[in-house]
Image (cartoon, rainbow, N blue to C red; front, side, top):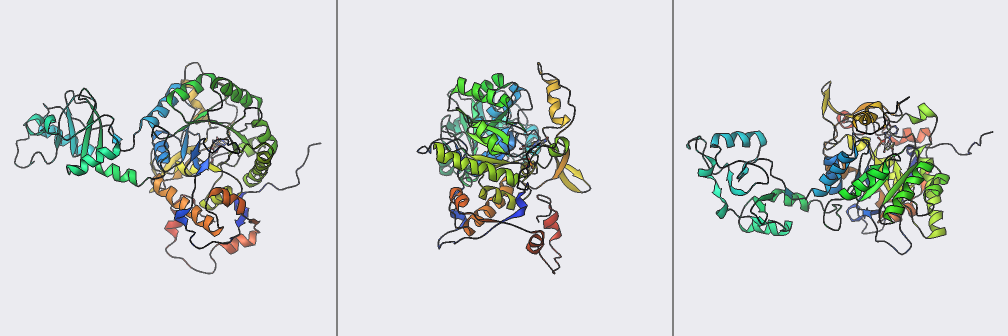
Length: 511
Ligand code: IMP
């Protein structure tokens, strides 16, 4: 007969945190959210950390290039989805690594022979008032000058004149040489009272533009997650089918961490993949494994050289129907508590600390806080990021509300990529484990995440914690009854102005 566990499968919203002593001087803005993403030895603190405890899900509708850049700029990490051809995934990784905060490739360029009228049309269509003039009109052509909307007067000048007659010629353009740092570029801009600095290579070809406003933006992102060469960090998802080809391509493209994307990672297939990566690339490559929901699954994946971090969660995702379809899964809180307890015991036994990621089913900011209190070192989210401006899906208006499409990786839609990829098997999908849906647009990632992290920091102060490790150690949680959930909402009052806030959609009703 099957074994029946004594405990009930529980979810995050069944728990509340009990405040602990907040000491004088403790403030939300002083809380440190840095957290490990790679396994740590007792004495080693040198491996991969992220600056805020959130990563984006390995999903087509979530972790594209723009979102990966936006999240790394806030200190988190994205895992670019592997449900695509190897070369396109590697190219996305390359694009994130090539993104140089503050240095942008010029996307409006002119030639000296263009007319003022043509350049005006270009300025109107791109919204840019500063246009580099290159010998071939490309973003990397030899720089011949710069034309701005201040170099001609629309009402007085003959608009059939050429750009060459009105531009500032290269000899008079204040510019930087390739290799210039962002700080040096901005010192030049400041000294010469300019808003835009072209950067050229040794042949005089345009390589980038630096805008004063971007520098200010850069200063507003003190948490940016950068590698040793000051490039943004990015992770990449892998699968158990083609890791022998995919992993080398992703590492060559510069991926900072890899993560198996699987609804059930307690398998010999995943162990074979981990072993292959360790045999071929050693211990320096950061590998995430999972998903698991039990101590038994944790123990399996940390065997031998093992994984660096473990994802916990089966069946809790917002678009997930695994539990309905297969009868497999576990309440996310129960799963996380069991795996965290085992992780702590394993650390005592071996001196090896394995970070844990709570993956899926985080329906509001409070649940993120509870997951981190219960032992997660960081959380992985799909829906949360799918609602942001930077997610890769188009905005769609439905009944006057703006939505974005969001679908599971276990849908026919996500798995269809294999049909178009040479050499991939087109295994017939017998049933789907996810749904194809829409989520309401919440706004720019930076704004959405700022609110969440501020709430997290405030709660940590309530618990008297200055960092996530203290938070986990000091947290005391209590199970709530249905009646205390009701008590936690507002009661016996009318709120006439809150309907927009509640309906703005990011979390739906936050109870
Ligand atoms: P969310 O944050 O609740 O939207 O959950 C995202 C997580 O759901 C992902 O990180 C995956 O672990 C999981 N997931 C993604 N696609 C599917 C699917 O099609 N079926 C089941 N789970 C999925």
